[in-house]
Structures are given as C-alpha cells and as structure tokens.
Amino acid sequence: MLLARSLSFAIFIAACTSSVVKGDGDGECRLWLGPSHLGTDNDPEFGIFAGVDFAPDEIIPDIEVAIPLVDWTEQFNRDTALKNMIVEFVESQVWTGDFAGAKWEGDQNTIVAIPGIGNLANYHSGYHNVDWLQSAALLRKPLDLFESGVAHPARGAITPYHNLTMKATEHIPAGMELFANFGETWDNNQTMEDSFQDKLTRWDYQHADQILDAIIAFMDQYDKDLTPDLQENILDFMLEKILGTAVGKRAKVIRSLIPDNPKKLKAVKEAGGTFLYRNNDLVKSQKWLKKHAMCMDNLKVGPSTIPEAGRGAFTTRKIAKGDVVVPSPMVHIANEELFNMYEIIEKEDAKTGDVTLDIDKSNFLQQQLLINYCFGHRESNILLLPIGSYVSMINHAPAGKANAYITWSRHKHVTNDHGLHDLSIEQLAERNKVGIVMVVQALRDIEVGEEIFIDYGKEWEAAWKEHMAQWNKDYEQDKTWQLTADDMKMQYKEKPFEADLTDGINPYPPSVATTCFLRTEDLPDGRPRRNPDGLEIFLYAEDLSHDEITGADMYVCDVISRTDKLTDGDLYNYTVLAKISDDDIVQVENVPHGSITFVDQPYQGDIHNTGGFRHYISLRDGDFPQAWRNIRE
Image 1: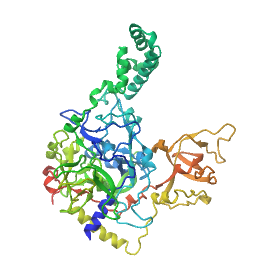
Image 2: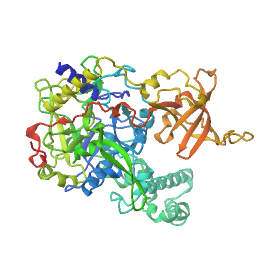
Image 3: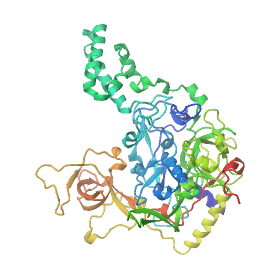
Image 4: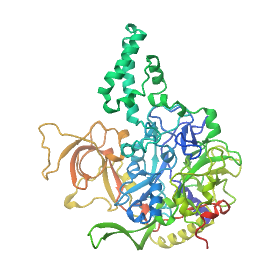
C-alpha cells in the first residue's frame, strides 16, 4: 500500500542520530530561538540561546544530520549574476564537508547543510562559546537502516552523515546566546570593516584575559604588602609600560578592555572574562526568553512507531492543540534548477587554452540530495530549507492522520517577514539574510513521547508511488547492491585491515577507499628518514586521542603492513602510505586500528544512485504566496 510505503520512506529520510543527551525535555527549555544580539529591530537576525547552564565540554542538546551539496559551488552554477547570488547566500549558511567527513563525495568540492545549531549558532568576531566535537560525526556508528549488500527503495534518498555534535567550550550561563567557532579561515577573511559586531577580535579578548589573569595572580600573591594606592600605581605601570611589549601593536585596544581600577579586576574575572564584562547584555533573563524567544527543545529523536522504519521526531513535552511544536527559520533557495546534477566536463578556451569545468546538460544524472529536505510548491521553483532543530526528522502521514502541520510564524519577535511574500523570485534571490520563519503547529493535543507527523502533500505521495513502481521493476529479479563505506566499517570494526597490496590490487570493493586520521611526529634519532622508495617516514602521534580528531586530520591512505595483535588488548597497529596532498605521499608507522576507516569513492556513495528518490515536501496551497508562483500550469 502507498501509505505503508510512503510512511516507511518518510521515516527513513529522517536519518537517525546516535548520541544520547541526558535530560531530554525534562524541566526547563534548554534551547531557545530568539532575536540575536547581532540584529536590529529593522533588520533582525535569529540566534540560539541557552535556557540552562552548560558546563565546559558539555554536549549541546541538538545533534543533527549533515546533508551534502556536491560540486555545487563551482563556476557552472554561477554563470549569471542571479545564480551567483543564490549560491553565495546558500554558501554562507553551510559548512565545509570536512566537519562531517564528506569531503570525498565529489572530485571538486562538497559543502554540507547542518540544520539546528549548525546553522543558527551565529559568528561573532570577538567570541565563541560552542564548537564542533568533530569526532562524534567522523567516528559515528553507521546507521543500521539497510541490509548490507541489498537494495532498498530508500537507498540514496537520505544522508548517511549524522551525529553532528557541538559542545560548550566554556561555562555558558542560562540566557547566553550561542556563538560558534567558525575557524581561523573565517576569522582571517573578516576585516575590521566586516566585523560589524565588534571592532575587537577574539584574539584581543584572549590576550586581555591572559593579562588580566596574570595581574590578578600578582596582586593576590602580594596582597598583604600592597596598599590601595600602590595597587593602582602597579596596575598603571603594567598597563602603560609593560603591555606594549607583551602584545605589540594591539596594546591600545587591549588596554581598553582591562579596568584601570584594581577593585574591578576580579569583577571582570567573575563575569566570565573581558568579553562578557564588556557585553553584559548578552545574557538574557528567563523572563526575556519566554517573551522574546521560542523553545527549540520540544523534540527528540528516537526509533519510529512504524516497525523497521528507522527513526522519527518525538515530543519531550505535552503540546496543546494550536501550540508550536518547533519553530524553524528557512533558508530560501530561489532556483530549484540549481539542484540538477549533470556530468562535469572540462572545457578549453579556444583562444587562451585555459581549461575550466562545465556541465553537459545532455547528460542529467540526479538532483542534489538536499531537495528531499526542502519544502516547495508545484507552481514555484523556490525551495525552503528548514533549519529548526529536528524539523528534518519529522515524518510523513497523509491528510487526516498527521498530528501537526507547518505554517508561517506569527510570533511577535520570532516572526516571519511577511513582506517577503510580495517579492518576486528574482527579488527574493537578491536577499542574503534569513527572514522567512515557519513553525510546526499541533493539529490536536499531543502527549509527551508521541511521534510528530506532517502531511508531505499529494505531489510527494504521487512521486513516491511512481518511484516504488520503478524500483520494483528494476529490482524484481536481483536486489544485489554494491557494498558501501558503512558496510566496510562494520566488517572491519575488529577484523584486521588488509595489508597485502601485491601487484597494486585493491583488496576492497572498488567503490570504497581507506582513510586515516593522522597527526605525526618525527622518527627518533638513528633511524632512516626515508623508505626505499624515497618517501618520508613519520610516526603516528601517540598523544592524539579520538576526541581530538578533526576532519583536517583525515587523509586517503593505503595499509602496507600490520603488527600482530597487541598484547595489551588493543587491536592492531599499521604502517600506511598517506596522501597528504596531490603531490605528497608519506609513510606513517604505528597507526592504531581505530584511526583507519572507510569512505565512499567520489560519486560512488548511495546518494549518487541515479534511481534514488527525489522530491521536495509540499507546502499547503493556501499558505504559499502568489508572488512566488512562477511556474503556473
């Protein structure tokens, strides 16, 4: 039946997470969506606020999926000014594929959309208090949705990247807005003119905090011998004479962050440092949150109520009829055609001889996977990507069986900009900020622990019915499916990796490759620094813990030898050849078993299956703006 099949797929599309966060939904709301410190009344931005205190290294309770966009930012998608604006806007809302381990999905580049905190935690030039725990995603346990080597109608229709997890980098008080670490590359691209939030950088605040700590330690050490006047003189001397030597050209800026009154030094420390002391309005009260923000903590992810169907979104609190289940700002993508994927070809300029990449529109391959996570309408080519927590986990039920629906936000402060409804698609494409806000709203009273369902629409159901008919025809006789990286991860969880590469034969399926998480150190004195083939030799850095692993540590590698099973109970150690760059291969010894894994070869993962299901989720016809309907039948 269509109902069973469509529900089954819809829950598959809600790709599961494997991390568990304590206290789901108990007590106070832990995360709020509200007006960001970075916005203004006339030009609001949205941010995430802590509803409770978070300790350093505590997991933020919004563990999400990452949805790849493969080769999407290349020049062939920017061949008009309008397309370029669309791509640049979407690019500002996503992360590089490294964070999820997705950088080998294509040959050119891969970016990933990460809803929830991955999108809504803003950038601040002077500060961050949350950062990715990259190892949670990179070392994630494979999903157990599909039988190894067996075809399934939902293969290629969901993202394999899950468990995207952020943690607190310091104590975060309740009411504080969450600011993410966007990395040094982003910081270095922000000039003082770009850093509109604060002319000071986070390095200025870090230097000021270090100096503040040193001054306080000195004052405490000699407290009994220092009169108030002497304390003032010493502080003045330190700030006027010593500071310039310590921090150089930024001394005047850093000087402005440290009080010249010794009595206020500890107040700065108690406030959480120079940034929070200077920006004490960043911490909002519970009263402010309840008035100006909306709770983003009403859902959690768990096994679906449909047997063998994967996972779905469940309520953590009782939701009354008409109340908001979860709010969701929307990233507008004003040209669905940009999601079409074609064969990429090289094109040579007849005059200059320069070679550029182009697409062969006579060879359509598939649509980008992200379309499955977007909302759209049959009379428009605009797509809306929901970035509210766990909205992408909400599954389908047909009309009459859904317990919620999605509509425009009418909240006074987290409101949808209804003026955008009057813009044409072209005008909307020119807007480079998120202004569209929708909410998932309860159609009836919903009890704690109920699964949330919305109606994906008749077009979606018809597309799924057509997909199932074709799938049954294609796989009626043979349901064999090529092995994926996730299959190989499970096979080699404890089994030793192959080390016999005689004659260069790949011991694994051609659709996968081995990769290593590597940081290295030099060999001890007395050992040759190069192997017989002239490649440099390094040792695996023993102090690299799994929690510290990042996507930047991940390299394609080949195992060339292994030790016997280790006597301390660990698995094996290996010698590998690692491809550090296109032109540089090195040999690394003593690589532990747990630092080797598998990835799908470019364009070989399930999401590149040309028969994979693709269709947006339909918005209700009565909600969809007339001005956006540019494809009328």
